[in-house]
Image 1 (cartoon, helix red, strand yellow):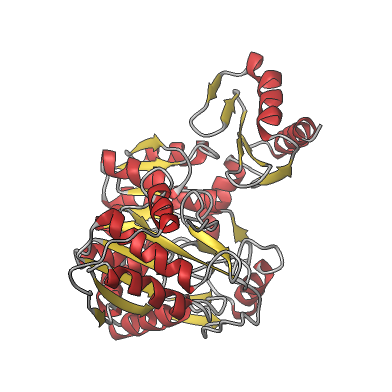
Image 2 (cartoon, helix red, strand yellow):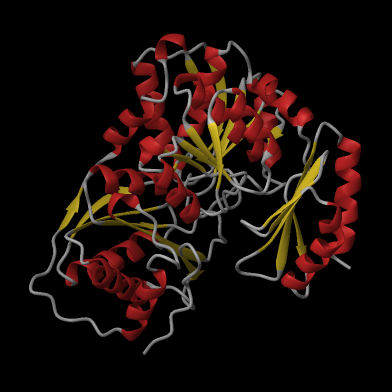
Length: 454
């Protein structure tokens, strides 16, 4: 038995050579096929130098188990979700390390309908099978087919825009030398062919596995000014940047100010409810008041779910929600197999500000003032459970409500906070918001951090 250490709660990630290599990916391919008994599996990979070889190793494992493989080439994670669903495949695998360091890589696995495979829904069993390595000989070796599925994907993306009402706009895009660049080029060509008055000013658009401008992770403070400065320099209407496999989307307003993902959730919820009133919207417990208010004012139903893509997707399917959003910049769509996309949010924002003859700045500025938040703050602690218990004991006696859906969410009349622990490290994550009171926000934040770090 061979121990495999790259399995995480939601995907597979590890350091090249020590935790993940071609042999590990081959064994995972065999185990994936043993677990699902698929007939056809879709595979794709990001721009990292090792991704094609790891993809081929996984594909060999699947084919040696008797299943056929469809390779859609270099792509984003959402293109694997889309192809797996639309082709009616029995599973899919994206080889990507997204925003992890350059010496890392990994796999994201889905089953039929692009349903996620996580620790609760199959990854534990797949790991055990891969470690045991006791694979039966298949009656046949599966085939490998190369397929360009990009045109169908772009056609689907275009359906999120009302081209007749789209107003002229200039958008700075930053692909971070990741997988988003070629997809953006194809989307731009489709927009121009349709006569859409949109100009993209592209930064770091060419895929480059050496990541000369840094690992694509727009949450890093040192990367955010690059997009923001370009927005100001070009007088753009907004800026958009993506991580390496572009399943997360980050936005800047016309002033070049980075917009926290929390406020984008409310914006996208409104975008859907304007054309589909009465629908259900999923939100996570970390920051909630802005989203709930917008959804209810627009005639929708706001439904809470535990954070994390597997939980969000499951809850969306259970109640047939049209959209789900996390403040971490993951956005999920019913018409996209209930999966997350980094391209659709940009298109919905373009469509919404055109319909309202407004701007991203105008739409989020008032919401940020109404529900100010310092953003997520991480604290390293000796024992996460002890830190959370200490905080709960301090605040629970005076709280209006305490919710334990995901960590602890403690609510008062004019402020609330959520405190949850990391799945992988001794870290607790604090999120807090107030009702139009920045001074109270800062005071309560300082108070909580002192208690957490005591």
